[in-house]
Length: 586
Picture 1 (cartoon, rainbow, N blue to C red):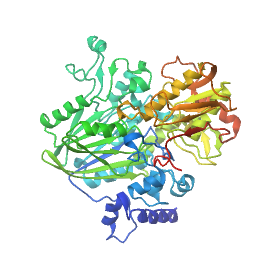
Picture 2: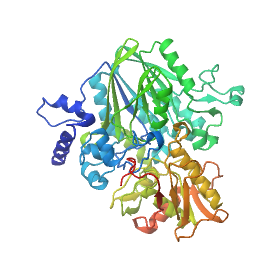
Picture 3: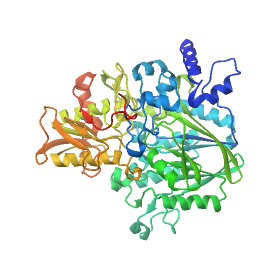
Picture 4: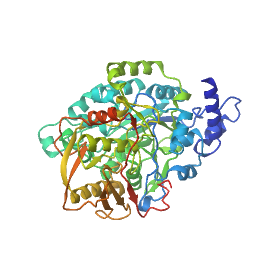
């Protein structure tokens, strides 16, 4: 183990020489010991730590970054729409290094075996405690961008409560949300009551009917349901943290979860909140804690003035360097901190009176092999997992290939889910949502119930079978595709393309709505006809009345029968008009 650690540290030392971690290397140049990626030099008077989209991954994980993350129109070739070698070149990261593995999917299997898993709350806690101690607790604030209380079986079984305990132990000072609300408004409020930090969301308002009926609100005059921002005293200065929760919750999820609330991006309201924080509450600096998705945040930064930094989430983009966006009032930095607990963002600020003097940002990969477990957090994780151990440890099958989910169009794990749906439900076609959460497995690793529920544990999981015409199937694909590739970021919802089984199709992302999907065929080569009816299986429907079988039961049944999991016939998506796009690996 010690030899492995020495080799790992040597690789880290080489990777630190250039690129986004050069300042760390320079600070260590006078030291004789091995390079320490986590030895950040102090800068400024305030430290903001940022974690987002952990999806309740309590233990270290493997997570394959996308090989396809297309930028269309004005986003072509721009952050975050670069992958693979183009990503390394864009950010100045050396190939075949730990950092290259953390930020890209290049040589994923080999690199993952070499550098190990990332994340895990016991390791995150060690890093947070170290960085907080080095900067001083009074100078540090820890922010959580949401999608934290959902994504694992432990979170699901406890309706998010287990993750509240984790957040409290970690010392989260403020958070916003997305999937947290899919436990329903009542449970969400119950979880917030146990959360020791501040919950902030400037873009959630009561419906007119709910307001008339006396629904609980933070501010009845404005109709805001929750506190829009909180002022944190750090480094002797006043830092405003404004919350921006996921703006499309009632559209992306069943409306019944939050029937009394309205959402939206609401950039005009955001401008008012920023102005209030600066003028009324005398904020010296303003940070927006966002769950918009990075493209939305980039547009928001161009339209709203007075924001110093947007710390974003939702689209799971791991971005080593913030993007500077100019607006009428100056410049706003936009950062995004990855997912699944793989990264911790460190924003060091030099805050003056009424202004931000300087910024230094580092997105740290949380390599489990380089960080010992925090004892208290490890004990809490063991306690929370204990009642579910027998269920979670069941081996369903063995991975016969890299099983992963993330990518604009395809994930091998999604193919497995679609195969299970078509076979177990006797359907011609399967449709599976393009969720961006769900960890990865290497060939030879056990596909356990733990791994399966990590990709399926939601509060509307039931499978269904429905008759659909070919025209309806095309409409579904077109609608989701527009969510992904509409040239206006404010129309995007931030997921990946719906996954399909039993059929192939062609996609032309640069086309307009209704004209992106073509050449739909069944696996046997038969063309899907607009007026013909097909038997379609799916799960996680937002509108359909649910059945009684959660998807994990259906997929588990299929996996138990196959032994080794390797997609026999994946759905093929032919892409047109994207040659040379750095958001796709050749």
